[in-house]
Length: 149
Image 1 (tube, rainbow, N blue to C red):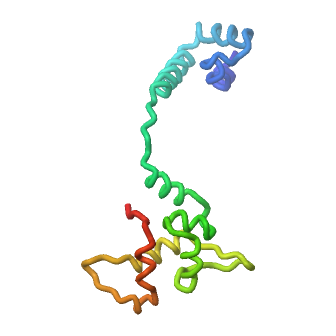
Image 2: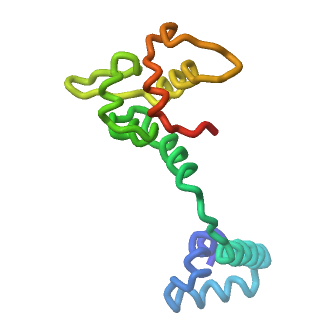
Image 3: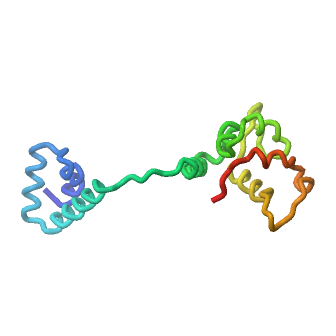
């Protein structure tokens, strides 16, 4: 057996998934190949560390925000409503002010554009704004429950 073939079967060997004949051939190779013994030791240590991995619970809000960012760039009304934690009817009622795209009869939103829009209209006490500046009803702010990172 050559080192390349050993490396190609190393993970299977480590997890005892090789045939008996292949495992025996790999053991013979290990007996005389220091380089492959080192590779096996490295992989064994990695496997051991992975088996010790502890899963920690993630807060639902953080998870939702992360999932939103991982979704495709173009999202639907229900996806935007879920992200903003508002009812879909509120989104539909404010389509005149929320940046969106029409694809035939369907309404879609670009995540990046929505995030920029939220940044632009975000209320901060240190800066005053008028709802007329952005043609936005202040009622929408009462409904949006998004948490800023």
